[in-house]
Amino acid sequence: MPGRPLDRIALRDHVREVEIGAFQQERGHLQRLRFNIVVEVIPVADAVDDDVDRILSYDRLTEAIDAELGEERINLLETLAARVAERILAAPQAERVFVRIEKLDRGPGDLGVEIVRSHEDAATPHRDLAPPPAPRVCFLGNAQVSGPDLATQIDRLAEGGAPLILCVGLPDGARPAGAGPLVQRRIDLLAIEQNAWVLAGRDARCIVTATRTELDWAMRHGRISVWAPSKIVLDAVESTPPAADQGAGLAAWLAGEMGAAELVVLGAPLPAADVPVRDSLP
Image (cartoon, rainbow, N blue to C red; front, top):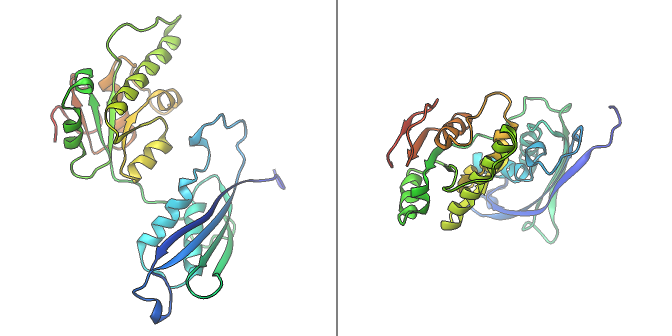
């Protein structure tokens, strides 16, 4: 509705050391830049319900900065600010962005520029962040999760540098019986998540991830994910995930959803999958 107040998210006093500047004396030297960004976002129609996938993530702001600084050397702060704003505005929630960049080492005071951009102001189509590399998804059976060589197996799976997403199935032993298939489905998904925490607790490199935003962040930052499936499975609308008791099948479904380079299945029969599948370590 016209005139409706917009919510805001902000990044304050984010300092990076970069080579930037049009003057010859600025070439070959790092100088500190301070970024302050405020983004006006369209409020969600109903309660957010603590759902990170429904909001504009703070990581989007730092990733926009990293992407532009990593693309090429830039002479002007104005150019850098405009490109950072353009990347942020590629997010559908972002309506208007204020970007202030200051040079901290050019004089007795801070020298900088502040710009305001909105979707209406954009003269060119928005560039989105480059997608992370295709991940390797791996399903580990309970024997692998509890085995003495877990760290060695993860080392092998992480070789090559592709992002790694680990999946597990139901733990051994009995589970509570739910009153109906929908209740039982939730109980089983929570049991898988308990197993995911067991795995993450055995290797400090692993973090439990439950949302697409968390998976994306982990892939961009070189972290190994252990997938907690409830959120993504229960929110799925375009495809139907397998039942929770089909652990390797659920991993195959995730691999297809994530555009994985391959699926590695250890300790379970090979499922049907839309990506290449194998049953051995790389």
